[in-house]
Length: 89
Image 1 (cartoon, rainbow, N blue to C red):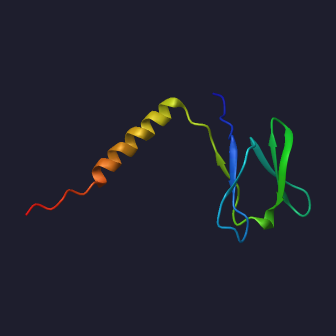
Image 2: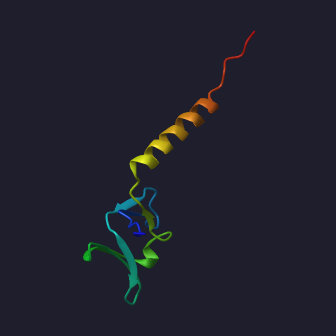
Image 3: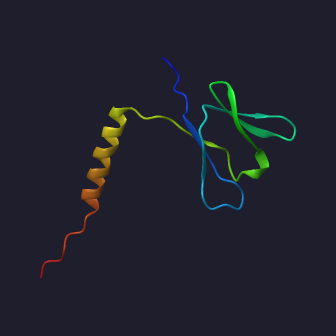
């Protein structure tokens, strides 16, 4: 079975409120002081010091059309179950 590769990583720098996205398929820790090094197709994309982030980079994987359809069905079901009916008087 082919291992699925991430298509981007979400990072949050210390002191920031918004997440940043890095388009890459690999993230490894290298060097001294340690840095996260992001690569796409083996080519360097970006790097950032480990201590500059609040937590580890979070990988995001591409979804299949079947997974998207299942997710949409789940969202509609949850939305319908969360609807409040008006009170009858």
